[in-house]
Length: 115
Length: 118
Image 1 (tube, one colour):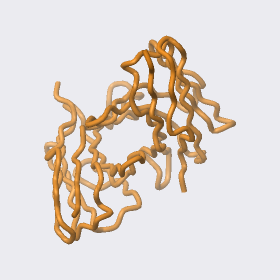
Image 2: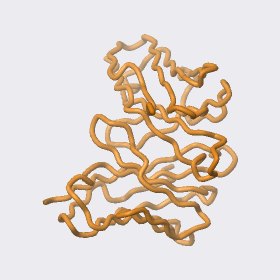
Image 3: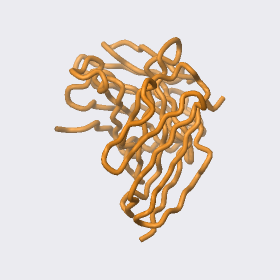
Image 4: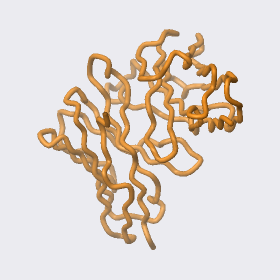
C-alpha cells in the first residue's frame, strides 16, 4: 500500500525554466510534508517543508504547494539550474496512531536540468 | 557542526550472517530513525529511538533490532541476513524538543551504509 506516490519517475527541464515535481498521498493523518533532494552517494538533504494547515511555503527558488482536498502537493523550482539535477523525494509525517512521527516517502523523481 | 555520521560506508556480508551499523546524530539531536532504501525506491521506515527506547516501528521483521546509547548514538542490527536485505541503510536524526516547533518535524539524514548480501 503506497501511501505517498510520485508518479513521474523522471523530469527533464531546460536551465532557467520552471521545474514542477508532483506528489500524491492517501493518508488523511499526515500533518506535515517535506521535500528532500538526493545526490548519488549522499544521504537525502532537506529542502523545504509545509504544514498541513498551510497551502503554500516559499524559500528562495523553491515553493511547495499543498492541496489538502486533492491530497496533492507540488514542488516548484524557479529558475531551474543544472545543480538542481538530483533525485527528489516527497515525504509525509504521520500525526497519530502507528504512523506518528515516522516519515513515509514516495519513490522519487529524477530531475535533470539541461544547460 | 557535524551532521549525521554513519559507519561503515560499505559492507559486504554473506547470507545468514549478522551485521551492525552505527550512527551518530547531528549535534543537539536526541531522536534517531533508521530507514532502508532499496534500489529505485524511496526510504522505508524501520524504527525510531528516543530516550534509549524504540518508540515507533515500521513493517520489518524481528531480525531487525536496534539500540540507542546515552549519548544519543544508535546501532542497527540485522540477524540472519537474506539476499533481500541488500540496500542502502540511512540514519536520520532530529531534535524532539527544539526551540521552534517546526524544527521537530525535520529529520536530517546521514550518507548511509551500503550493505551487500551475497
